[in-house]
Amino acid sequence: MAQVRYHIAAGKAEAERLYAALDAAFEDEGAPVAISEVDEAAERFEVSAYLEVAEGEDRASEVAAALGRDTTDGISREDLPDRDWMADVLAALKPVRAGRFIVHGAHDRDKVAANDLSIEIEAGQAFGTGHHGTTAGCLSAIGRIVGRRRPRNALDLGTGSAVLAIGIAKLARVKVLATDIDPVAVRVAAANIAGNGVAPFVETAVATGFRARAIADRAPYDLIVANILAGPLMRLAPEFARHLARGGDVILSGILASQRDRVLASFRIQGLYHRQTVVRGEWVTLHLTR
Image (cartoon, rainbow, N blue to C red; front, side):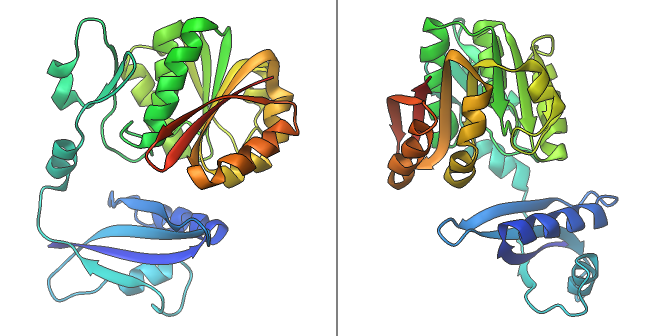
């Protein structure tokens, strides 16, 4: 058997529909399904299904059927080499430091020093191992802000693997709500939260933006962090303002340097003022306050 990646490109809404269809169709065989942005300007996403395929066979018709299509047009095939992909991933994921935080996998526990705030995350289904510049930027901002202005309750919007929620809980020992639009990400986040010993502090919930009873019940928040994308952040700016306590802090990332001014303008209209920008490569992390 060989592993083959079947993939198809689409706009965001359609890509999310395709992802859900493939995930449901191949769940029983445990086939990985992924969605990734391939063209931010055009808002194009690629959905992939990694299937085991016998030599000389093709499962493109199964993929098409799962997507409700009568043809395999638009579905591309990539034959993957026979490699231990998880070993490769773990070897590439070196520990990342951001202030007192160190994000690492189980294979690098020996790299954690006595005074480090360890966040252990394995490569898996949910976005966010801490190795992207946006995540490291958020952790740096959390370390600086929480150390100076201890929040009473916090919201991690679009939590992914819960790196940021875990970081807040470990540093401040306060209640944190971690939400994500993807139920799979929420399940992975809950497992990571338990594995890092902060389950008494962090609650998880599935939420589309701010639309969830759990978010409303715990508002207002002294600290809201969101590492998503510039477009959704700008659209949600009024909701950030509505759910933020007086004097509260907001940390935003998933923003390219070229998008910084537009994001700041969207939040300034809502009465949130820019305090600091953290730059990591082409990405920026923004700190705002009411």
